[in-house]
Structure formats: structure tokens, C-alpha cells
Length: 182
Image 1 (spheres, rainbow, N blue to C red):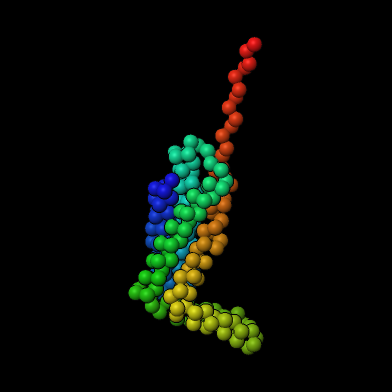
Image 2 (image 1 turned 135 degrees about the vertical axis):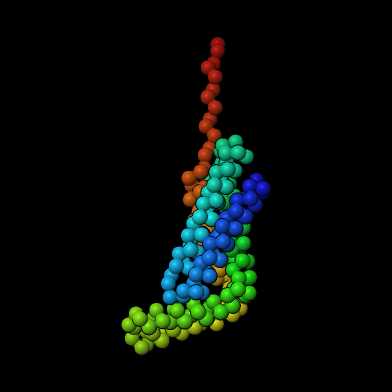
């Protein structure tokens, strides 16, 4: 079980990391377009396909073709946590060394989009203060880690193991009892 969890968690982590790197680079060079986010979320979907495949592999090849919802959920969540942890660790490194001005560009782009919404001055100030507040939190690595875990785990990192468990659960059929001879 452990090898399957690690294998599929690592595959998912490598996939989501590759897409995230591309998405972050796209955003940094074209911040006014949401294409970077599209790459990031597409990578999450592709990566979390491997959670489903990993649970299926475990059920079919290591668990005799049967698995309870609880066991499937546990296996899926462990794979999901490995995938998410790789994603978070990679983002912390990328943010620190490759894109240290990411949050400044993100804030600037967010404020530009906000200006185009035609909000009243009071509404604009409330939204601007909120954006600046989160920009301030992002200066702390602990907050970066927490935000990044939330980004990938809520909802996709939690939802995929639940869906996988619901689809893949399979209980063994009761063996037919042989006819009674008298």
C-alpha cells in the first residue's frame, strides 16, 4: 500500500509542479491575462487524476479487487497530501528564488482589474484594503504555505479522494453456498 501511495502521490506532485511552473512563468510575463491560472488549475486536474488511478490500482492489484469507501478515501487522501505537499514546497522555492515579486505583480493586476469594475469609492477602498492585507500576509512564509495548501486542497485535494472512494468502492460478493446434500 505504501509504495502505491508514494508512487501515485509523487507522479501527481511532479505533474502539478510542472504545470504550476509554466503557469507562474506565463503570469509573470503576461499578468493581465488569466492564462497562468488556467495552466495551474489544469495541472491540478491532471495531477489529481493520478489519485483516482492510484486508488483503482491499489484496489485491483493489491487488495484483491475490493475496497471499502473508508480505505479508498484513506489511500486517496494520502496520495493527495503527497501531491499537495510537493506543490506547496515547489511554490515556496519558486516564489523565493524565481518569482520573488509575484505578489507585487498579482496585487497590481488585481487592483487594475478592480479599477475597471466601476465600484463606488467606498467599495473600491474596501476591496483594495483587502487585497493589500493579503499582500502583507504573503510576506510571511508560513502564510504562503497555508494559502498554497488551501489553494490545492480546497476543494480538489479533498473532493477527488471522496469521489474516487465513492466510485471505486467494491465489496466482495457473498460466496454462493453449495447445495445442501441430505
